[in-house]
Length: 356
Image 1 (cartoon, rainbow, N blue to C red):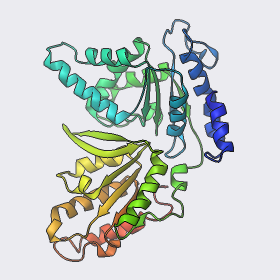
Image 2 (cartoon, helix red, strand yellow):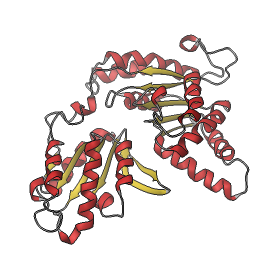
Image 3 (cartoon, rainbow, N blue to C red):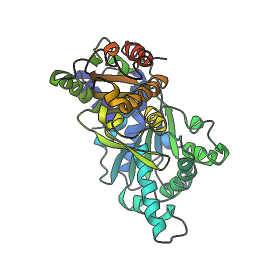
Image 4 (tube, rainbow, N blue to C red):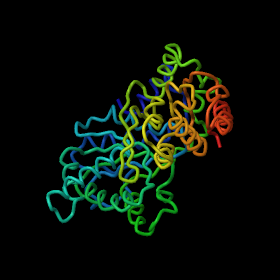
């Protein structure tokens, strides 16, 4: 069964809603499935690639948040008959690359990218990335040479992104050095825009409660149910590299993350960490926001900074808290300044939050 049939079956079963933009992307995945199951590449949709191209071209599917990009890629990944396959968030992949290069340098190699690429190509034929984005100068300088090695070894790449290739690392430092990677992406991947007018992620929460108080077992059950809708019962740890440090997010899937107040505000994190988190996710489910006071002043300050970062990035917040926003921080240094945070927490509960 190809992806087109699977998609239709799920529509008939009520699991998915018919979407012409999603359906238009299905032939790309169908043909890639067929190509991966053949000993040599076929032409068809990929005929514009030269005959001397030995590796199978992959897919770069981009579009707005919540349009179904990751859903289609996951359907493809689950269905394709290729045992040497890996599905990973792009941030996590780059973190592994940095770790691998660090270990390779210990051996005295001249080029640390080579052994990292060799390890990947020895283990994987199909790489599926969720949410490719480049915001770090170090990543920007690595990806071009790394992907050259991967493509040369026949690794097939499928990736989702919120932006077209030409907008990757836009306005980044020394971006001219990054342009060859953009050209490589457009040469080796089918670039397809998923231009659906519907944000299914946003619609999933339309009219639904997103702020639960008190933070008790009932609230946790509600958050767990919402999380299961976003994650599909699957999750991975997300590790963000920020100025040489690691920021760990316990659960992550398809642009949505889940963490506790302690995970994000009870540890020595700062503005750069929260900005990196806000760039990497579109939805945050945050458990157990406590009452704030002079007794947990540092955690309260971090919480204010976290909310500011999420607010500016238009990240959807779903949370449980000890009380309503206006009663979270009633006494102690910082209580007056918290009024702005309480107002933002209220605004972030509205149905249209994140549309802009």
